[in-house]
Figure 1: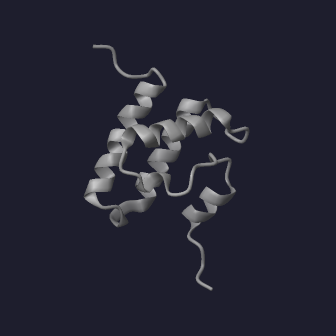
Figure 2: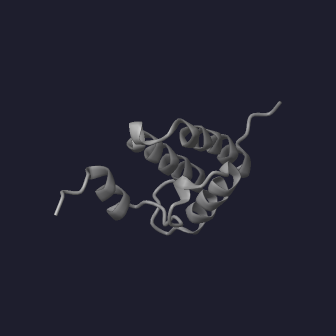
Length: 94
């Protein structure tokens, strides 16, 4: 049996959010942001406020995926950061 990567262990055992299966493979930033927000707000295991927990999980995934993440999916996930800011009311004022 191959050894698990530390990032997989962190994802499975930490005070991470309970996310829908495959959420980071979706192609709609708004849908991903909504799922992250729902999970962050309903989680009783998170240590930070919902916005920080959701953004941290997204950033963690992007960083851990590294070269395995296609340019198109990386773009979707980067746009998801902006959507998260919007759904949590953290978007910059214009």
